[in-house]
Image (tube, rainbow, N blue to C red; front, side):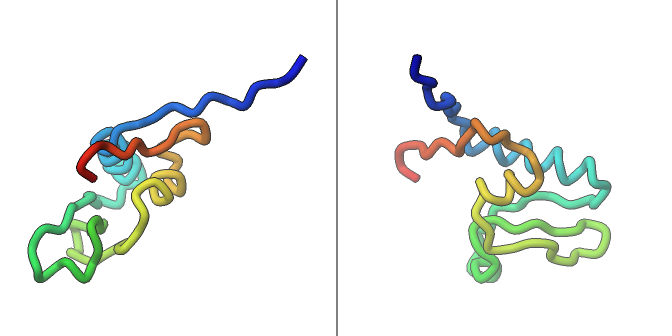
Length: 86
């Protein structure tokens, strides 16, 4: 009998963002995930993480799915779903 490949489960972008935010709070970093919109912060990338207690930048210019995996916010069988228009 052939073993089938494990089924991969899509996770929406917003869900991944929320999982990252919760994971950061668990680490007591007082950090938040911010999606940059203004021209002044575009050099930081689409997403960046700040430490709200010091206003210091903890991470920037990262791939959302890779960062979520680093924080264990998404499991190995999950993947970031690319929605239409992205």
